[in-house]
Structure formats: structure tokens, C-alpha cells
Amino acid sequence: MGLEVGMIVEGKVTGITKFGAFVDLEGGKTGMVHISEVAPTYVNDIKDYLTEGQTVKVKILTIGEDGKISLSIKKALPQQRKPSNNQHRNSPQKQSPRPGSYEWQSPRKNEPSSFEDMLSKFKQTSDEKMSDLKRMESKRGGYSRRGNSQK
Image 1 (cartoon, rainbow, N blue to C red):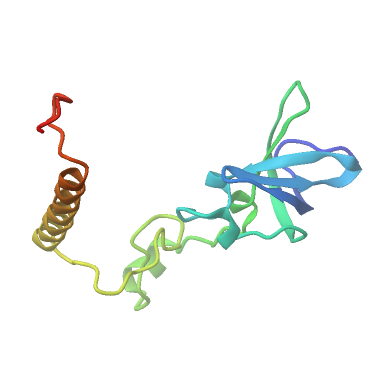
Image 2: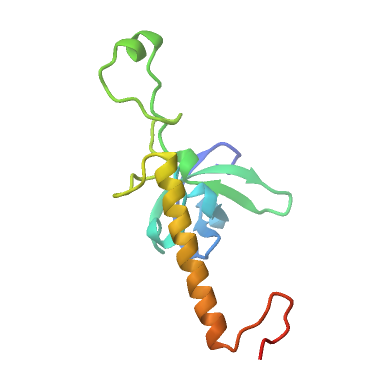
């Protein structure tokens, strides 16, 4: 049986890079899962989600004329059924804030809840970084924005 776009197949992770993972498929073929196709959430480090030798289910996204196979792990995940209108209105269960019935980002502890809190946190972080930069600049002898030395 040949590989076709849209199929969901199993494969073994054979290599991991900072931009994706290579997966061996049936028939001696190899495809690549881009980092954006690993999980339904933002992936900073692919090694947090995959390891070499791991068996994964992947969906075939494209097969190029050059034989390159593009894969997705997140699109091979089972899709949860959306509730009908009657269930949605009267359901006591907490509804997901985003479509797709999954959290896009895990909730963080001590995360500011209002815009003003977030703005205050941003300003504080920005001020700290500017202070660090000014300190480093003074240790190096100080340079003006035009690149001329202030010595």
C-alpha cells in the first residue's frame, strides 16, 4: 500500500532538529514533521515533546514532486466532537476558551490577569533590561547611539 496525502500512519522518530523531526514511514520512506505541526500548542523546544526512537502517529500533509513528505502529528490527533447547540447552552461543564476543545497555552502561576497588570509587568521587565544594558555599556567604556566613544 502506497502513501497518500491525508493518510494517518505510524512512524518512528529517527532524528530531531531545532525546526522539526524526521520520521521513518512504511516502504523505507522518510518524512518531516515541522515544529509547528508537533502539538496543538506553541512548541519552544521540540525535545520536550519527542524523543528519537519514539513511535508516533502522523498525518501526511503533502508529498512533493521531489519525494519530500510533509507530516503533522497534531493533525493526526483524534478530534473531539463539538457539542450540539442544545448541549452547549445547558451544559454545566466549563467551555474551552478557544476552538478545538484544547488549551492553547498552559495556565501559568502568578500570571497577570488584567491589561493594566500585564502593562505594569512589561514596564517593570523593560526597565530592568534597560538598566542591565546601561550597566553593561558603562563597563565597556560607554558608547553613544551614533557609535562614537564617550571617552
